[in-house]
Length: 134
Image (cartoon, rainbow, N blue to C red; front, side, top):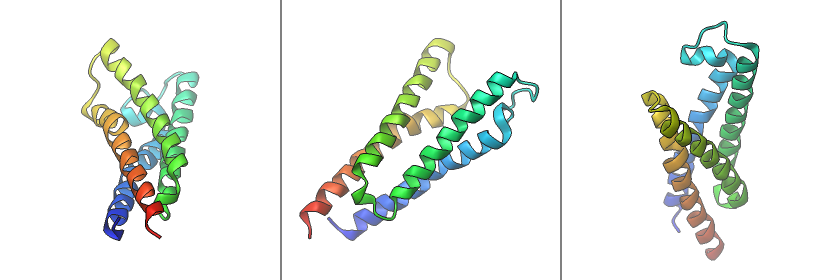
């Protein structure tokens, strides 16, 4: 494995982790208003939205924390990917049952069901190759 491949993965994960960090942070700060929802949204909806946004923010921070020693974090990376894909499946169910969301939400779906698993496969490869090379 080359240092170049590890560096490329680190850069990709650093960039990709900014998506949940920014979106989660905005959701915590703005609540459903971040999507243009009425500012008078029910307290339960607002609280739930901000809670889930906080989880998203935490997932992004946890992915970002793997970057410095990316090959050593196979378990964490795998768990985080399962969480993201599970959320993506929920979003996919909404797409099927309710209809297509905005382009931003479709991009989020692609991140959840394509990008995150792709990065996980790449991370496993880098981790596996790192063990072989002293």
